Amino acid sequence: MDIAITKGRTLDTIEVSRPDGSLATTTFPKKGLFPHDAVHLVVESELQLTAGFWGRVAAGSAPEDIGSITSSGGHRSSSRAQTPCEDIVELIQAERLVECFEAEMWSERTDLVTFLQVFDAACAQSNIKRPKLSEQSVGKIRKKLDVLCARWQRLGIGESLVLFWR
Image 1 (spheres, rainbow, N blue to C red):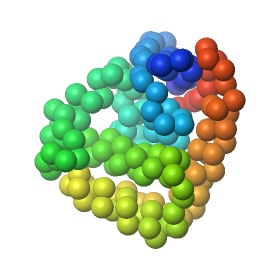
Image 2: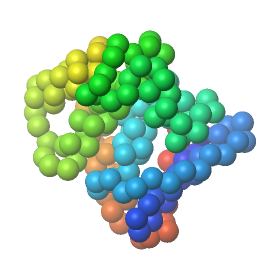
Image 3: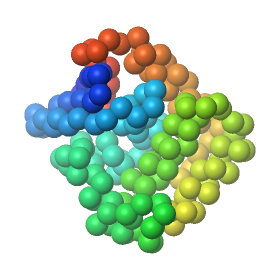
Image 4: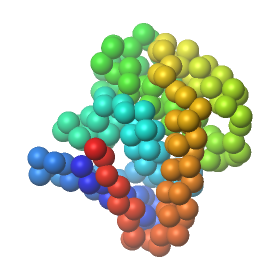
């Protein structure tokens, strides 16, 4: 699946071309230095999550419908979390891990032990188990995010970062 994330002034745009030929387009407000959904792509690809944000979009869900999918699965937010339905666990795991990487992107990196402690706390708050996460996979995600974030920062308004979901 091809994914183009286009930089806008106040809103960025995602355009998705699925293998079956269907298309999806959505906009989202700027948040941080790098698009949130692009962080999802890196995290979900590295951990081979198939039922996270991008796996669901590839399967036909509209990007803007993912929030209602988690809500209907029993997970409205981390502060009002219930035990979620099993079919949304990967989606929540990905979201919590993305938040951890975004926190590092917005401030500074921590050591692996601290990073995993924060991720464990986020998973516990959401009533889910942490997926397997190695030092190597954290390092790969960090490196890929560094490269993509630098590319994103160099883009002008109206230019796109083109990515691929397996």
